[in-house]
Image (cartoon, rainbow, N blue to C red):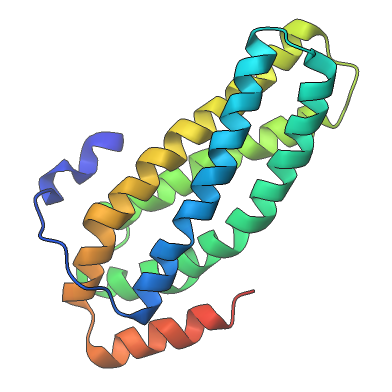
Length: 174
């Protein structure tokens, strides 16, 4: 499904309203966290101090999840339904975005469930680290699609009142 957004490419960048600007501004710190996770997974692949790095990976994945969950809720609970009024939610950009959210969350949840169960061999730790590499790939591409396609589309689509409502509602999600 990752290619489904290509039909919406080539949109000019628009100055984003406050709510969309906030959602976009949440991406760089999340990307920094993802880069750190990816670095840890590389060390695990190379069997560099694997027990220490795997323990660190568990801690850092929990930190990412704590930061990612409210961001996702702001999009899934507020932005996507507002855009869905205009473009629907069962197919097209919103369906793709929700699918990617689900895939990233599933990878993270599977990692945490299995990693926290403990007693994992080196090979199992490497396989679990792949789940975080998958989440990394999904989310880095996903954020780019939001910034280059979805947010500019929302800026053009939503009315001034809707943009104000978007900002108000996302402030309520902590």
